[in-house]
Image 1 (cartoon, rainbow, N blue to C red):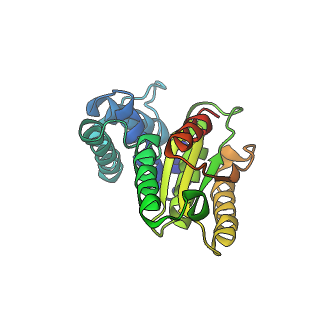
Image 2: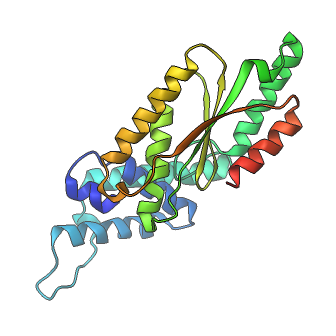
Length: 227
């Protein structure tokens, strides 16, 4: 994915940020991460006469280094300050944070007397990247997360529940069917622009109704996250 973005000369911020976050999450240090970036840049820029490439961080464009290093630092700090709250690949809150938000929703429902199943829904997006490997396997999750963030930008909680599952905690309203259609269009458009993902089926989008109790809803989140 990073190679494709750099070669195409298009927008590289999201893929480089994903690289920095993923390397930080894996435990790689900043120097190791930037050396990986420098090696990639050296390959794309052309090898030495003997066919070998020499990674040189100082020769890597400052913009690429800045984007990658900033994402790495943010992910590293998030792991220290907010363990298991932010998914490093997508930049979305994890299931742990979604459960916290859901607890607030159930407490508010107890005060108002309106049950959660009548006021809120869970939208689940499942990415089937079983035929993909390496970075291409992760691209679908990153692009789907970006699309959901764009469509559900009115206070909804968009979270990562598992390696192939994203979810949106949203209120029930008349606009929800339209936004579901908009999400499908946005996801399809983003995936179609990446040549590595031409064989990837569109993520499955579905709406789930919450059960009456918070404990039951947490069990639903756990089950969905293992899909």
